[in-house]
Image (cartoon, rainbow, N blue to C red; front, side):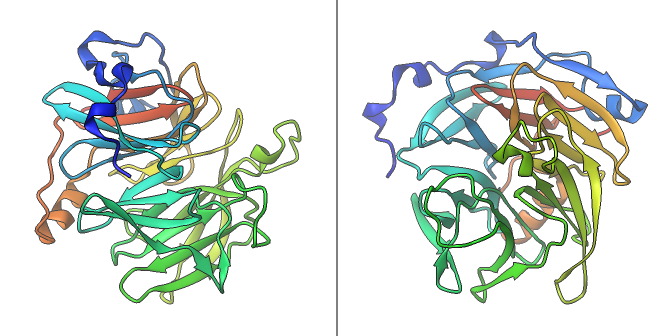
Length: 335
């Protein structure tokens, strides 16, 4: 349910204005000069919030606000924006908990929900479950999702949450809200799917393999990003290791307007070009769970085609969730 206004907790309502909390916490490692054009390496991020129990799933909304999950607190938070100022407040509690968020092309917010074991969509202030089963069995703990140009939802379903699960294995699925078709995708090499993203042309699917999360001491377990070619039938072909991630394992992944892949990991964010070459890293004091960019020009164009008004950020911004902290970075002149 929606968290009533009169019940907002004081600490969240304080607002955490971006101009007051500059975090001297980021270190930039530049391996290719292109990285310096993608993010402003001469500035520190702003710390917007530091009271999280496990923050996840940032997503910029059409109006410029940002949705995030606090998984362990079982609530969704909303970052409201007024010019250059940000205010963080409770939004939905209990939230499930939710984990990943994405927008569909009508500007509606989608979420993976651990508690409900499904994918849901926000409609007029209420969450509607779109899909929560495959072949009659509940999903394990849907984790992250992305949307293709046709509006189909790709999502991952690892075993990160429930102790008792109906389904063996950890898989990637594609759900079509228009036809209600749900398909489990064949993903050779993949052990534990986590973050997920599509290339700009929608012809490559990237999946974070976080098998190491099940036993961080067992370095034989996978900690890599895999890439798959999507064929004309929508099936995945040509499985390959795009990048091995360390320290820790990959979590949230996002593709920027140049096709670069940004991967959250045990010490921050690693940025790779489309060929898998690392361009640079952002080092932060906590494990980074996920990230989100301002809406891209292409996303804005598609939303406007669906009669959805969308706000444009100038300069574009990067929102990053770590264990307890939410940061915002200014992106570079070449982003």
